[in-house]
Image (cartoon, rainbow, N blue to C red):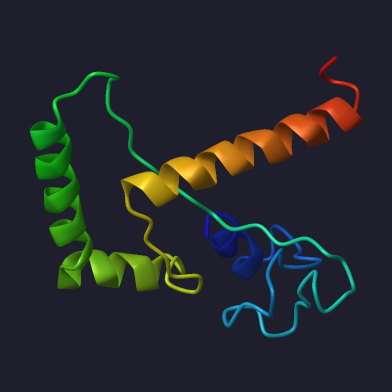
Length: 117
């Protein structure tokens, strides 16, 4: 999403998309899976709260954010930014599990590269 304007302006060349299939905005750029590379990765964003936040406050914030995500304005933003291609929403428990998995994955990558002991 962040690179697309640079690619479209000819200031950057895309060699592959790190996706299961080609990105609709880049139909001539192969995906990693298509190239035989067993790796995909998507853009993700998350919100966190201070440990010990009362559950009712966490639920209130979660519900407000979820409602905002369903508004036409936000949906248009997703499409305009090419963030709709890999849709997804994770609730608090699933997001925590996902983040822990990402932390483990990137820790192993950094260890394999010698940046971590």
